Image (tube, rainbow, N blue to C red):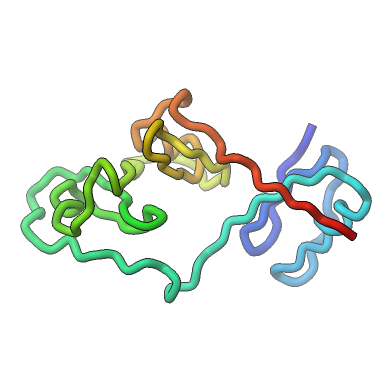
Amino acid sequence: ATMAVWGLAGVAATVPEGLRPTKMVKPGRHILLFALLLAGVPVSVQAQVTLPAELLPSCPSAGSGCEFDPINRFKCGQLFLCTYDTICAVNNAGFNQNADCCQAPTNAACTSIYDPQICGSNKKCPYLNLCLAKAAGFTDAQCNPPPPCTLDVKI
């Protein structure tokens, strides 16, 4: 069995049951992970990165004329970081709803547990977890975890 251990700076590690970290020293330094790797303990690591504002894409304006359209949120553009409240706003911003956007979750009472899912058959829409994917209209069968990253550590 494994347990999830959340570290600092958005890094999560899964370690075998029974190995409990005593402490992590200084934000961003994950001494425990390196100690486990050195000891030959299998460790799975996931990182969630927050980009500085200057690296984020600028989102085109939705303009006006959409105030009376029904709310139907979409995330569009590079990395799906631009959020628009209506299909009208998506179109005004110059995006193609089907090609450039993913449905945003609506009225979701979900946890913020990081268990990423990629949903959809043609376009791959990313969600923080399955609950949010379902709130965007996807089913379990339409979603999968992203392929794992491998960490090859040589000492």
